[in-house]
Picture 1 (cartoon, helix red, strand yellow):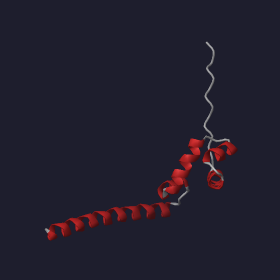
Picture 2 (cartoon, rainbow, N blue to C red):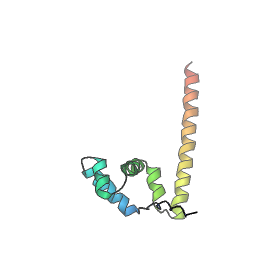
Picture 3 (cartoon, rainbow, N blue to C red):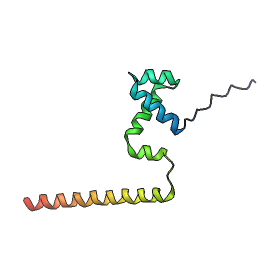
Picture 4 (cartoon, rainbow, N blue to C red):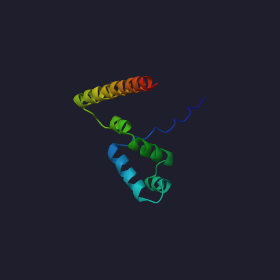
Length: 98
């Protein structure tokens, strides 16, 4: 029995390459043409563009030191708590107006 050929390994792109690809995609007429110029899949470039729009995804790709990661967790928890308090206050105001 012959050995089956191994599938090609996934290429990993560093943050500098991604940033340059996003810059090129912004400057070009279409994302597909930028992807062709960089020899990458257009879907991958679209995914990077989507991730760049969301700060959480962008932070995930960056190397955060433990102090910054802890502060980010605390701020997210504070944001959730304040959103819950706001909802409670909205319900209280609505019930008072009835």
